[in-house]
Amino acid sequence: MRPVLPDEFGIVYAHRSDEVKLPCCVKHNLAATNVTWIWFSTKSVGVIAVYSNGQIIGSRLGRFSLYNRAMGDYSLKMLDMRRDDNGHYRCFNHDQQLRKYHILVMGYGDLTSSS
Image (cartoon, rainbow, N blue to C red; front, side, top):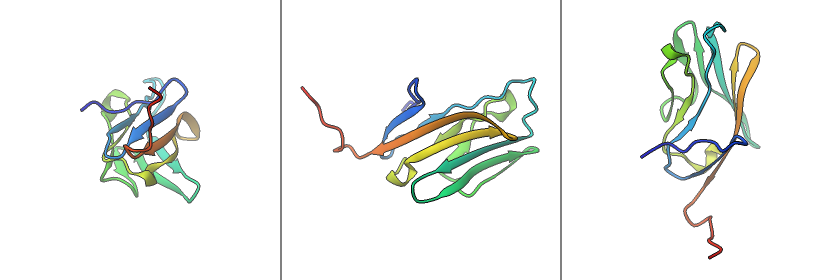
């Protein structure tokens, strides 16, 4: 199964149990010694993953992982999406925000067809 990607506005419409990829790439001329993914929801704020000097740490790793860091790709891979994953996600390199996204996880009965 291919991962769900954001639309051109940075919004991801995912279903429960989907795999999602949030792109975040660092140009080679920027030192990517500290890349951080932060999650914001109406209930809380949390650090998902921090890449610092070759080490990955994070409070939500397990279902979440980072892609090929050797190629400057710090995209966040999210497995088995759940409704509690709704919220805003931001990728930072040092203090510079690189990307931001909004995720809306829906159950299969949440979408209706107009046909």
